[in-house]
Length: 586
Image 1: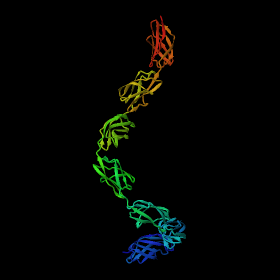
Image 2 (image 1 turned 30 degrees about the vertical axis):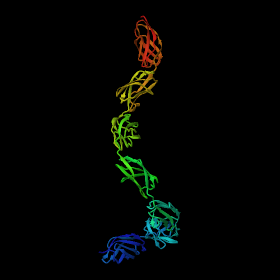
Image 3 (image 1 turned 90 degrees about the horizontal axis):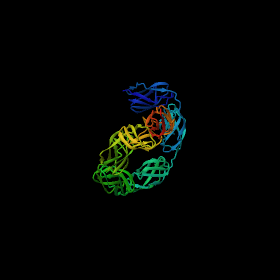
């Protein structure tokens, strides 16, 4: 089968020829000629059956590339364009110097750098990492002295820029901290010194350590396992440092002396303090076969979370020094909690009030539920829990407590809607108080207090969920009447929850103070606190009247037998004093 050409890279080059190209395809073994149009390529190398490298011959325009082999010539349409490509120009190297061992990244800045085929540091090719029209990054090869860096593209070879190879000073190490550690390794060692940049290896004797951090003056590394005293060295491009001694220490086995507590619930989850010696670096705490979670660890004490278990089991501690002696730990079956009272047993739908739950076996409560809703636990003793009730709709819900021993019996808790006051009757009364007032609204059944402004009423009697009565306290002015229940205190809403305190009415003068026994005379009454007058009587006989102001009323004297009678007014605050009015014979 004739050769097959699938691609060429690059796809364009200088008309003068000489552009290095890579041709990809198949059937290249034994190829005898590579042509760019009619012209033979030079420097042809058959890399494999699928790849050829060559340099382009001189040419112009766009030409087809063909490969001729023992079975014929390729026929695919793979083209190469001869174009005038500007030669690359270099303007900067960063950095412009580096270690003689090479390996550092150098950024080359310039123009016309697209399609770079080679970067040379003197005679030595560098590895190209990235290539854009204005920048190339490359890995510097090893070298010495000052050399020229050039870039080759299809447009030619660039101007040179100087690059200096610097002899890297050998590293020196002055201290190890710590200078000893466990035979199991794994501890962090800080190595201080100079010329430590670019450390490639840290050895503890013949064994490499894991390098964690590296600065010019400090390395941190994880010590490998080892025994005895060994030399630590650091290797950089500048060579290998002086050695410093590091001693592997046999760690003594841990010993445990007490567990506190030495028993706990079968569900685990409680914190156990383990006291002893040589406990540093504990890797495991076992309760029988089950690992515990280690919380804190010092040379003489460990705190751990006990796992679930049953019966009596052994607790052991494992460190790099081995496994400790065992101490007994007993799993105790925790009795289920029982709750006997809630105080209070009702509260507002908004929640937020504190409820005290009394009972037994309440230690270690993990949850308090009001119906399906968790409450916030504030305090917890074996016989009492205080919790913040969550919000809930008006309803009766079950309160339960969960501990390691299970879930308690339920107790009922009532969510009470806030009371609403829509009216009071009467709306007026004497400032001395003492009169009965009927209060209407909703959610009043559990009323525990009624206030007239800041003053508490007495004689509270609940008639229904919509009505109650109370005895007004002394007061002045107009006040808001509020009702308090487990659902909260009523707030201003629809209706008229106001009550006005009135002074007792007073009559100062009657003008005239005489009239015909036939009645019909207009009598002007001067006095005080007359605004809410609801009746005027002449000797007990009602008169028609009108109130003109708080100090003035006008009444029409009713018919009456001749003689002198008392005139009196009445308001919600009570009866006024009486003044005499004389009826003359008709």
